Length: 320
Image (cartoon, rainbow, N blue to C red; front, side, top):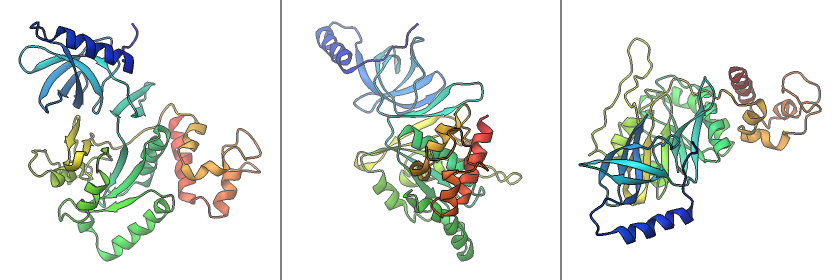
Protein backbone atom coordinates (compact mmCIF):
# COMPACT_ATOMS: atom_id res chain seq x y z
CA UNK A 1 0.00 0.00 0.00
CA UNK A 2 1.39 3.41 -0.88
CA UNK A 3 2.37 5.85 1.83
CA UNK A 4 0.09 8.84 2.17
CA UNK A 5 1.67 12.27 2.07
CA UNK A 6 -0.14 15.51 1.44
CA UNK A 7 1.00 18.22 -0.89
CA UNK A 8 -0.16 21.81 -0.48
CA UNK A 9 -3.09 21.42 -2.84
CA UNK A 10 -4.37 18.38 -0.94
CA UNK A 11 -3.98 20.25 2.34
CA UNK A 12 -6.11 23.11 1.00
CA UNK A 13 -8.77 20.65 -0.11
CA UNK A 14 -8.92 19.20 3.39
CA UNK A 15 -9.21 22.69 4.84
CA UNK A 16 -12.10 23.40 2.47
CA UNK A 17 -13.79 20.14 3.46
CA UNK A 18 -13.39 21.05 7.13
CA UNK A 19 -15.12 24.37 6.54
CA UNK A 20 -18.02 22.61 4.84
CA UNK A 21 -18.30 20.01 7.63
CA UNK A 22 -18.13 22.46 10.52
CA UNK A 23 -21.12 22.38 12.84
CA UNK A 24 -22.45 18.95 11.87
CA UNK A 25 -21.28 17.32 15.10
CA UNK A 26 -18.53 15.20 13.59
CA UNK A 27 -14.87 15.49 14.45
CA UNK A 28 -12.99 16.89 11.48
CA UNK A 29 -9.33 16.70 10.59
CA UNK A 30 -6.99 19.39 11.82
CA UNK A 31 -3.30 20.18 11.63
CA UNK A 32 -1.06 19.23 14.53
CA UNK A 33 2.58 19.05 15.62
CA UNK A 34 4.11 15.79 16.85
CA UNK A 35 5.88 16.73 20.09
CA UNK A 36 6.77 13.19 21.17
CA UNK A 37 7.13 9.88 19.42
CA UNK A 38 8.01 6.41 20.59
CA UNK A 39 7.41 3.60 18.10
CA UNK A 40 3.68 3.68 17.31
CA UNK A 41 2.81 6.08 20.13
CA UNK A 42 2.56 9.77 19.34
CA UNK A 43 1.75 12.92 21.27
CA UNK A 44 0.20 15.50 18.96
CA UNK A 45 -0.23 19.14 19.90
CA UNK A 46 -3.10 21.11 18.40
CA UNK A 47 -3.01 24.78 17.40
CA UNK A 48 -4.08 25.80 20.92
CA UNK A 49 -1.20 23.94 22.61
CA UNK A 50 -3.31 21.05 23.92
CA UNK A 51 -1.77 17.57 23.72
CA UNK A 52 -3.45 14.34 22.62
CA UNK A 53 -2.33 10.71 22.63
CA UNK A 54 -2.52 9.47 19.07
CA UNK A 55 -1.82 6.47 16.93
CA UNK A 56 -1.13 6.64 13.20
CA UNK A 57 -3.00 4.85 10.48
CA UNK A 58 -1.15 1.79 9.27
CA UNK A 59 -0.66 3.07 5.71
CA UNK A 60 1.55 5.93 6.89
CA UNK A 61 5.32 5.89 6.93
CA UNK A 62 7.03 6.26 10.34
CA UNK A 63 6.19 9.57 11.99
CA UNK A 64 8.70 11.26 14.26
CA UNK A 65 9.04 14.18 16.60
CA UNK A 66 8.79 17.49 14.75
CA UNK A 67 6.46 16.19 12.04
CA UNK A 68 3.44 18.21 10.99
CA UNK A 69 0.40 15.97 10.55
CA UNK A 70 -3.31 15.88 9.87
CA UNK A 71 -5.19 14.19 12.68
CA UNK A 72 -8.68 13.58 13.96
CA UNK A 73 -9.81 13.72 17.57
CA UNK A 74 -11.41 10.64 19.06
CA UNK A 75 -12.95 10.15 22.48
CA UNK A 76 -11.33 11.90 25.42
CA UNK A 77 -7.79 13.09 24.83
CA UNK A 78 -6.99 10.55 22.13
CA UNK A 79 -6.83 10.81 18.36
CA UNK A 80 -5.68 9.26 15.11
CA UNK A 81 -3.13 10.66 12.68
CA UNK A 82 -4.49 10.41 9.16
CA UNK A 83 -1.76 12.02 7.01
CA UNK A 84 1.81 13.24 7.11
CA UNK A 85 2.44 16.77 5.85
CA UNK A 86 5.52 17.58 3.71
CA UNK A 87 8.82 17.90 5.58
CA UNK A 88 11.49 20.51 4.90
CA UNK A 89 14.18 18.41 6.58
CA UNK A 90 14.61 14.93 8.00
CA UNK A 91 17.43 13.58 10.16
CA UNK A 92 17.88 9.84 9.71
CA UNK A 93 20.37 7.19 10.71
CA UNK A 94 20.99 3.80 9.12
CA UNK A 95 20.11 0.66 11.04
CA UNK A 96 22.07 -2.57 10.98
CA UNK A 97 19.40 -4.66 9.26
CA UNK A 98 19.24 -2.18 6.39
CA UNK A 99 17.30 0.95 5.60
CA UNK A 100 17.07 4.29 7.35
CA UNK A 101 15.43 5.16 10.66
CA UNK A 102 14.00 8.69 10.94
CA UNK A 103 15.14 10.55 14.04
CA UNK A 104 13.44 13.96 13.82
CA UNK A 105 11.74 16.08 11.17
CA UNK A 106 11.53 19.75 10.23
CA UNK A 107 14.60 20.69 12.25
CA UNK A 108 16.70 23.73 11.40
CA UNK A 109 19.90 22.83 13.22
CA UNK A 110 21.64 20.07 15.16
CA UNK A 111 23.51 20.58 18.42
CA UNK A 112 26.02 17.76 18.92
CA UNK A 113 26.45 17.67 22.69
CA UNK A 114 29.56 16.25 24.37
CA UNK A 115 31.21 16.63 27.75
CA UNK A 116 34.37 15.79 29.72
CA UNK A 117 32.41 12.86 31.15
CA UNK A 118 31.69 10.53 29.41
CA UNK A 119 35.04 10.82 27.68
CA UNK A 120 35.11 12.87 24.47
CA UNK A 121 34.74 10.67 21.38
CA UNK A 122 35.79 12.61 18.24
CA UNK A 123 34.75 9.64 16.09
CA UNK A 124 31.17 9.87 17.37
CA UNK A 125 31.18 13.63 16.80
CA UNK A 126 32.34 13.07 13.22
CA UNK A 127 29.57 10.53 12.65
CA UNK A 128 26.96 13.10 13.67
CA UNK A 129 28.60 15.78 11.52
CA UNK A 130 28.59 13.47 8.49
CA UNK A 131 24.89 12.78 9.03
CA UNK A 132 24.13 16.50 9.34
CA UNK A 133 26.11 17.34 6.19
CA UNK A 134 24.35 14.67 4.14
CA UNK A 135 20.96 15.81 5.46
CA UNK A 136 21.77 19.44 4.67
CA UNK A 137 21.13 20.51 8.28
CA UNK A 138 23.57 22.97 9.92
CA UNK A 139 25.39 21.59 12.96
CA UNK A 140 27.05 23.13 16.01
CA UNK A 141 29.05 21.57 18.83
CA UNK A 142 27.99 22.05 22.44
CA UNK A 143 30.59 21.41 25.13
CA UNK A 144 28.60 20.83 28.31
CA UNK A 145 29.86 20.49 31.90
CA UNK A 146 32.73 22.96 31.49
CA UNK A 147 32.52 23.48 35.26
CA UNK A 148 34.18 20.05 35.60
CA UNK A 149 37.28 21.13 33.69
CA UNK A 150 40.48 22.35 35.24
CA UNK A 151 42.61 24.91 33.43
CA UNK A 152 44.92 22.28 31.92
CA UNK A 153 42.04 20.04 30.87
CA UNK A 154 40.25 22.97 29.27
CA UNK A 155 43.33 23.84 27.20
CA UNK A 156 43.77 20.23 26.04
CA UNK A 157 40.11 20.02 25.02
CA UNK A 158 40.30 23.35 23.22
CA UNK A 159 43.16 21.96 21.12
CA UNK A 160 40.89 19.04 20.13
CA UNK A 161 38.19 21.50 19.10
CA UNK A 162 40.48 23.68 16.99
CA UNK A 163 39.97 21.53 13.91
CA UNK A 164 36.18 21.91 14.14
CA UNK A 165 36.34 25.66 14.56
CA UNK A 166 38.63 25.77 11.50
CA UNK A 167 35.81 24.08 9.57
CA UNK A 168 33.31 26.75 10.67
CA UNK A 169 31.45 24.49 13.07
CA UNK A 170 30.37 26.78 15.94
CA UNK A 171 31.44 25.56 19.39
CA UNK A 172 29.36 26.60 22.42
CA UNK A 173 31.02 25.94 25.80
CA UNK A 174 28.49 25.94 28.61
CA UNK A 175 27.35 24.40 31.86
CA UNK A 176 23.83 23.33 32.70
CA UNK A 177 24.92 23.34 36.35
CA UNK A 178 26.33 26.87 36.62
CA UNK A 179 24.28 28.40 33.81
CA UNK A 180 27.34 29.64 31.94
CA UNK A 181 26.67 29.87 28.20
CA UNK A 182 22.94 29.14 28.42
CA UNK A 183 22.04 32.62 27.17
CA UNK A 184 24.13 32.04 24.04
CA UNK A 185 22.41 28.68 23.49
CA UNK A 186 18.98 30.31 23.75
CA UNK A 187 20.03 32.99 21.26
CA UNK A 188 21.17 30.28 18.83
CA UNK A 189 17.73 28.63 19.15
CA UNK A 190 15.82 31.83 18.41
CA UNK A 191 12.93 31.10 16.01
CA UNK A 192 14.43 27.74 15.08
CA UNK A 193 13.64 24.13 15.76
CA UNK A 194 16.80 22.47 17.07
CA UNK A 195 17.71 18.97 18.21
CA UNK A 196 20.16 17.92 20.89
CA UNK A 197 22.11 14.84 19.81
CA UNK A 198 24.91 12.97 21.51
CA UNK A 199 25.86 9.97 23.59
CA UNK A 200 24.16 9.10 26.85
CA UNK A 201 25.28 11.00 29.90
CA UNK A 202 26.49 14.22 28.27
CA UNK A 203 23.63 16.16 29.85
CA UNK A 204 21.12 16.80 27.06
CA UNK A 205 18.10 16.54 29.35
CA UNK A 206 19.93 18.58 31.99
CA UNK A 207 20.42 21.35 29.43
CA UNK A 208 16.72 21.46 28.65
CA UNK A 209 15.94 21.44 32.37
CA UNK A 210 18.27 24.42 32.78
CA UNK A 211 16.63 26.26 29.86
CA UNK A 212 13.12 25.40 31.07
CA UNK A 213 13.34 24.89 34.84
CA UNK A 214 9.58 24.47 35.27
CA UNK A 215 9.47 21.33 33.15
CA UNK A 216 9.80 18.04 34.99
CA UNK A 217 12.43 16.03 33.11
CA UNK A 218 14.08 12.95 34.43
CA UNK A 219 17.75 13.76 34.80
CA UNK A 220 20.13 10.90 34.34
CA UNK A 221 23.42 10.31 36.02
CA UNK A 222 26.57 8.42 35.09
CA UNK A 223 27.04 4.81 35.98
CA UNK A 224 29.88 4.68 38.51
CA UNK A 225 30.99 1.36 37.11
CA UNK A 226 31.10 2.09 33.36
CA UNK A 227 31.14 5.92 33.26
CA UNK A 228 28.56 5.60 30.50
CA UNK A 229 25.27 7.41 30.69
CA UNK A 230 22.09 5.61 31.45
CA UNK A 231 19.40 5.94 28.81
CA UNK A 232 16.94 8.15 30.68
CA UNK A 233 15.35 9.64 27.55
CA UNK A 234 13.61 6.77 25.78
CA UNK A 235 11.60 8.87 23.33
CA UNK A 236 12.26 12.07 21.41
CA UNK A 237 10.43 15.04 22.91
CA UNK A 238 9.93 18.59 21.62
CA UNK A 239 9.87 21.54 24.04
CA UNK A 240 8.81 25.07 23.19
CA UNK A 241 11.30 27.79 24.09
CA UNK A 242 10.78 31.53 24.60
CA UNK A 243 10.87 33.70 21.48
CA UNK A 244 9.24 31.11 19.18
CA UNK A 245 12.02 28.54 19.33
CA UNK A 246 11.75 24.81 19.97
CA UNK A 247 14.24 22.16 21.01
CA UNK A 248 14.07 18.37 20.71
CA UNK A 249 15.65 16.08 23.27
CA UNK A 250 16.63 12.81 21.57
CA UNK A 251 17.49 9.49 23.23
CA UNK A 252 21.18 9.12 24.02
CA UNK A 253 23.27 6.67 22.06
CA UNK A 254 26.62 5.05 22.66
CA UNK A 255 27.24 4.84 18.92
CA UNK A 256 25.75 6.49 15.87
CA UNK A 257 26.31 4.07 13.03
CA UNK A 258 26.37 5.08 9.37
CA UNK A 259 25.84 1.58 8.06
CA UNK A 260 24.73 1.09 4.46
CA UNK A 261 26.40 4.32 3.30
CA UNK A 262 28.89 4.11 0.47
CA UNK A 263 32.41 5.50 0.85
CA UNK A 264 31.68 8.30 -1.63
CA UNK A 265 28.64 9.38 0.37
CA UNK A 266 30.63 9.38 3.60
CA UNK A 267 33.39 11.44 1.96
CA UNK A 268 30.81 14.07 0.99
CA UNK A 269 29.93 14.32 4.67
CA UNK A 270 33.42 15.63 5.46
CA UNK A 271 33.05 19.23 4.34
CA UNK A 272 36.78 19.90 4.04
CA UNK A 273 37.12 17.02 1.54
CA UNK A 274 34.85 18.80 -0.95
CA UNK A 275 37.48 20.80 -2.94
CA UNK A 276 39.52 17.65 -3.58
CA UNK A 277 36.85 15.05 -4.27
CA UNK A 278 37.04 13.87 -7.86
CA UNK A 279 40.64 15.02 -8.31
CA UNK A 280 42.41 11.79 -7.35
CA UNK A 281 44.34 9.95 -10.04
CA UNK A 282 42.05 6.92 -9.74
CA UNK A 283 38.27 7.25 -9.68
CA UNK A 284 37.99 4.45 -7.10
CA UNK A 285 40.68 5.92 -4.84
CA UNK A 286 40.24 4.88 -1.21
CA UNK A 287 42.48 7.70 0.03
CA UNK A 288 44.96 5.33 1.64
CA UNK A 289 48.16 4.47 -0.22
CA UNK A 290 47.12 5.05 -3.83
CA UNK A 291 49.43 7.28 -5.91
CA UNK A 292 48.01 10.65 -6.92
CA UNK A 293 45.51 10.83 -4.04
CA UNK A 294 44.28 14.41 -3.79
CA UNK A 295 42.86 13.91 -0.30
CA UNK A 296 46.14 12.64 1.13
CA UNK A 297 47.97 15.47 -0.61
CA UNK A 298 45.59 17.92 1.08
CA UNK A 299 46.42 16.33 4.42
CA UNK A 300 50.16 16.70 3.72
CA UNK A 301 49.64 20.38 2.88
CA UNK A 302 47.67 21.01 6.08
CA UNK A 303 44.25 21.53 4.47
CA UNK A 304 42.74 18.43 6.11
CA UNK A 305 43.44 17.33 9.68
CA UNK A 306 45.01 13.83 9.82
CA UNK A 307 42.55 12.90 12.59
CA UNK A 308 39.61 13.61 10.32
CA UNK A 309 40.99 11.40 7.54
CA UNK A 310 41.61 8.67 10.11
CA UNK A 311 38.01 8.90 11.32
CA UNK A 312 36.79 8.84 7.71
CA UNK A 313 38.55 5.49 7.22
CA UNK A 314 37.10 4.15 10.48
CA UNK A 315 33.55 5.16 9.47
CA UNK A 316 33.97 3.60 6.02
CA UNK A 317 35.33 0.39 7.58
CA UNK A 318 32.40 0.17 10.02
CA UNK A 319 29.92 0.76 7.19
CA UNK A 320 31.07 -2.31 5.28
